[in-house]
Length: 511
Image 1 (spheres, rainbow, N blue to C red):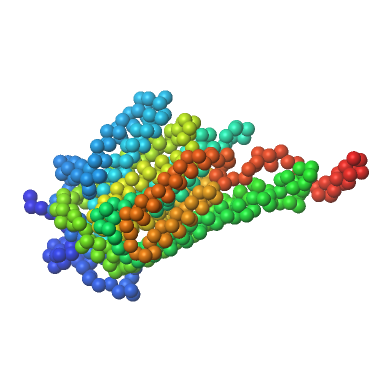
Image 2: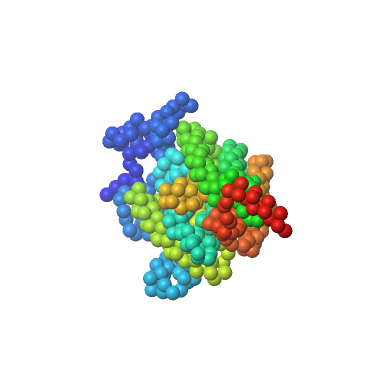
């Protein structure tokens, strides 16, 4: 049987006419070449051209080709990562055969997440190459963030509130909200400092100075600043008002009925602010997607097109075997299934890991983001090494934007639906790290150039943050920036203000 293209009905860059004649009625009008600013948004997003390098020359599913393409992946590093696949079945086996060894299960599941995320990232790349350029890049970034979304949802589902009278309230007592909050901020920091730093570093080894387009750096940095502002508001609100709560305001330790601003009231206000802010941030993320998808000539189209011609291994990449559409779907299904299963095993072992001495904040800020973003990091670093610095930059800033504007707010909404008190009241120390990280990265992006020294400095900053997070104490309450001494407030006595005045008068008259 002669070769049939994976998506036969879609036009390619080099064969508009032939594709139209063989489309059999499927989208023959989709070959419209130009789209101006007045073109309808959704149609122009769907009418973009299919990149010819996304074609496989085959159709259906072929096991030998599927395994060969999966093994070779997109680059040599991803190929080496495939040697970690034995950890995946071992992690699943240990989960049921050795349930009394939680650290072993956590370790194997953690390592097994790397090849699973790598397959998800590679399948996302293959799927993206069958789509319009900007749409493909956005979809690839979204697919890479699915691991993070699944992790957050698994953790919030497994979170449980401390039982009345039960000591605890930190991660090792079933309270996973501090770990989720740390993971949200850690994901942003990992992309901005570690991944971007490594991209600058390896790119600088290939070329002394790499230049990138201001459209990506300025838009990305601006969105991150807006996101950081939104994430900072609940924490700033709490920090400004936590000293105004009512308990302990008078010498006898009484709280009057007129003093309504209790610690519980403040916590409820923080939760409401977080929920509304999350909705607004998700709307902002929708605007970001709409801005990029409004036409095939969006702000990033020209940048990605320019980078394609500067790819150092472009010819080799084009000659590489591809997945068919069916094989891409199967790879996405397998990777998502395995990643979800391993993430559930990871979440189940968090309590024993914290008991073993791994701090909550280090686990959430450093360990979890490293494994959940493994696929995107490998992709971005490979692109930077090949000289495709703009696409690499997009893969660093894009996931950070999605985490801040969508993934983090989404888990707040899910917690709202489930009745879990998930909020955006982060530790001030952590949120300040994120804001400073965004400012540092923005300063490096300002001149439109990068070199290996700037990359090394970003990685050094990330290492310093990792060291500090190891020594940061575990939170003691449900929200990681909670009110100290909340247990004391339950012991306060509430009486009428007039009665309080009479009691004080009696005390003064009878010293």
